[in-house]
Length: 388
Ligand code: GLA
Image 1 (spheres, protein in one colour):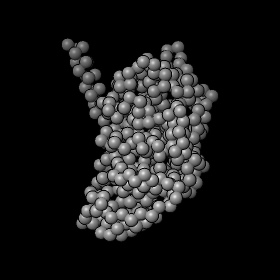
Image 2: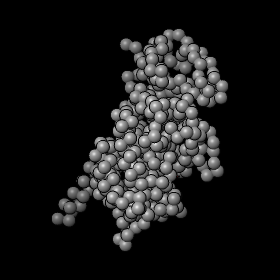
Image 3: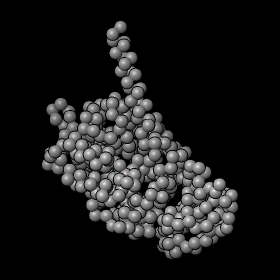
Image 4: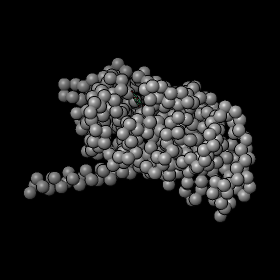
């Protein structure tokens, strides 16, 4: 009798935690991750400085909240199987670091891998899922990015579901970021496996359209792979086209604006990947443009999609709350481009006010053609506001 009451209690609390976890990431997560800029060169001082800079740069005010350490923080396991952080790079321990980040009003994220080893050869969580989840919860982890290297013959959905169950069991709400590079189409099972976001492609690179044989590519090539996935995204479960390269030097300011605009139009997670301690004015302006971020964070949670493809000229569309619409005109060419758009041809009827989100100006209404020049590799990003 006593046993069955205990069992019922355990089942009930697991259900409550599962419900709690469902409330996570109702809008796409925003934060910073160490990988794009620092790779394996991570340590506690740098991470603390990044948290400080997230506050002082205005990024926290703009909505960024997670500070995530990617690969290479871990070195081994102790005799009981507990995961050990690099004692030289993290001498105060991860729990203290999480405490520091929380004291800034921010949240803390960490990285592991569903296989035996991470992509950089550090210990993975295979066989230690429940133990690691418990450790993360005691440390105060709020976000887990879970990679897919060294998985041998493991089944992807089963492996991610296992870690999700472990996270739920840990009793702490932890955002679950599936990083499986799109290999097994995670948009089809990621939500069921408990993912709050899932990578849809290989790694983003710090360039416009470069590509590597191991699956890395520039942001514009990643963009091309997002169209058609829009029906799988929504509050609590997002397609993740990878972290931002804004401010990392491989893209000029115009290109950074385009990259950031399209990520917002896609309702993508916004994880900055640059050095926040050394951030230029123009990069700050891009990353903290609140009207652009509002497109990403719109409560409807609709991922935008392409409505016109004329080669170098594309039009992207995202429905917003209150019947507003976000429209992004993209010039993929290396030359300036003149456009003259009749809104009716886009099926945009009725009268909307036009707000230019980068110029931060109202620029007329949709009752006449929209004429403008788009910079090379640039965008014009608009919010169409329904008039009463
Ligand atoms: C994979 C992931 C990257 C990063 C590295 C770390 O390549 O896709 O985002 O986490 O591993 O090793």
